[in-house]
Amino acid sequence: MTLSVDYNYKYTLDIILKNQAGGLGNEQWERYWNAEQNAYQADLLGRWQARNNGKTGINTGLIQDETIMQKLAPFTYPGSLTIVAGNADKPTDFVYRLAFRVNGVDCYKINHNQIATVNDSVIDAPSITTNTYYFVEYEDYYYILPHTLPTQTITTAELDYIKTPIDVKWGFTYDNDGRQVYDIGSSVQPQWLPDDCREICKRVLKTIGVAFKDSDFSNFGASVQNSGN
Image 1 (cartoon, rainbow, N blue to C red):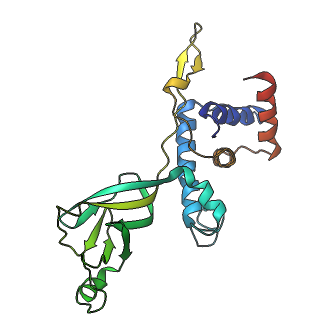
Image 2: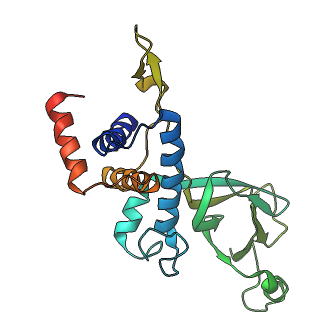
Image 3: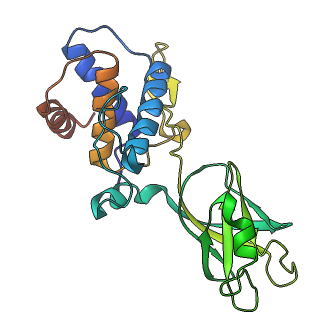
């Protein structure tokens, strides 16, 4: 279960207030949080270079270990792609491919300069009869071999992939004094697990130049339990 958008927003404001660092409006906070959650996902997916050029995450990559796969579980999705004229468009929220299948069997990735070689192969040529399929990846679609598939029997491909996080939103209404009051019905909640929400909040605070201690979050959580707010 994730931490609510209200919890994350109030935590950020609590640390800002503690540091007497001014204020942060909900729209500003949303922009920071959504930018940082995408950067965090990119770090988990794997920027293998050394920690430079502003990289703040760990030097690991996707499938480096089971822990990272668990962190990315909320964004792991099985999709069905429609094959049209031998091509299958990627989903609009696509980030990273985990597996690709045609007719229920693995479809193997090849490089662009291997298309002719694979087509001319006398051993493992693309074939519907033997369920041997290949694909070449382009920016927003997959080029599938054999490129001519009978539409009456094979119309879809299966894609397991990592999708982009949805943007969070702190929804609100106004009370009788014209103050903003959190409204869960118009809010968009984070998809991350609690520890990852905390990490993203810490990144937001670093981005806006606010100092904090690791104990601040646990202290805030305890105060929420005690006060109910």
